Image 1 (cartoon, rainbow over the protein chains, first blue to last red):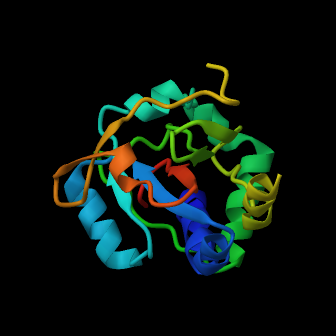
Image 2 (image 1 turned 135 degrees about the vertical axis):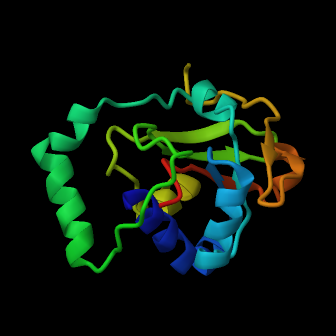
Length: 137
Length: 41
């Protein structure tokens, strides 16, 4: 849910990002059929692709967390905040790994990482303002 | 890895229709936010 909420925030601010010269590519790790359903449901204005072997995740150092991670007060509080904001809990398919962490990486045309933001936990994502500041810096 | 100023390999991803696509083929801007998701739920 935090991940999709973040994607929604990025999608709502896509024009601002484009105006700042930033394109967006979303990468998941589910099978293509799950991606297809997601794209039909969310209709985000940028490419959504999948990395089933998680080569990209591994390369940028995005690891997995344990089940105990979700019992931390900060994580529970952040999930509750999202629920109060109206975010929906959707059923995970068995093909998805809830323990995988995500992250945001600003890269240039030659794929050089200009800014790396690997999520510290399951609810940790940068704001759009932060992403814009990376590009400005 | 040292994430600052690292150059990513030209990863091969899959589109929703299952067709393979290189990261370099998806990049259309001077700067691109590569957003790795935890899951699609």
